[in-house]
Image 1 (cartoon, rainbow, N blue to C red):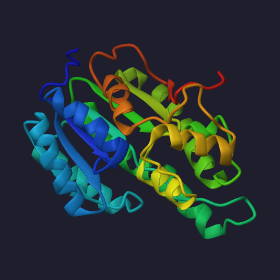
Image 2: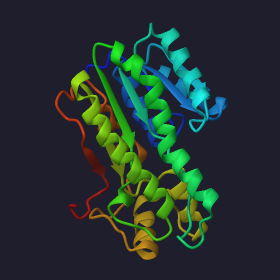
Image 3: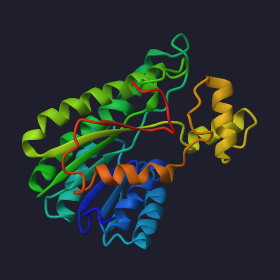
Image 4: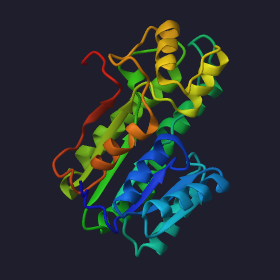
Length: 265
C-alpha cells in the first residue's frame, strides 16, 4: 500500500533501535526522509545507513537526551534547517527504564520515569509544533504501553508515566484538531524488545523464541496474550507507519493496542 509518505519529512525519536527503528524502516520504505534521534551517535549512524538502504532519500542521526529541553530544541533547529522549516511526521518511541515494586522504587526513580516517559515527549512536541504547523499535512504518534490497561506490580512508575503520556496525547489531539494535525497513541503488548529479551535471559529463557518468551511472561506475570507468542518489533512498524501517514485521514485521539489479543477495556 502506498502510504503517501514519499518525500515526507519525519523525525523518529528513539529510532536507533527496536520498535522505533522498525517504524522508521516502514517510513523509509515508503520514500520518507527520516531523522532518527537518540543518545548514541554510533547506533544512530548505523540506523541511518540501514534506512538509506531501505529507500529513504535523506536520512540523518541526531543525538539528544530528550529530558534536556535545550538539546531537543537544537535537534529540531537542525531539522528545520535541513528540511526548509517543515515536518510531516513526529514519532516518539522513547520510554522510561524503571522497574521495581511501589515499595522498592525511590523518589529519584519516580522522577526519572516521568522525565523520560512524559517530559521527553513534551519537549519533542513543543519543539516540533512550529514545523508541523508549517507543513501541508502532519501527524504525531506516541508510544504508550499495554501495561496501562493490564497492570504489573513491578512497573508502577513506568506505567504511571505511560498513562500520563496517553492523557497528554489525547489532549493534544483535541488542541491540534483545528490544525488537522492528527495525534494518536500505540500501545505495544509483549514485544521481544532488547529489554524483554534480556529479562528472559535472566530467568533462563531464550527470549528470541517468541513462544518461549510468551510462556515465561505467563508464568512470571500472569499476562499472556490470546496469541501463543510474543510480538516482534517489526510487527509494530506498519501500524505506526499507517497512523503517521496521509492514508490516516480521519483517525485521531485513539489508543491502538498491538498486543496479540487481550481483554477489551
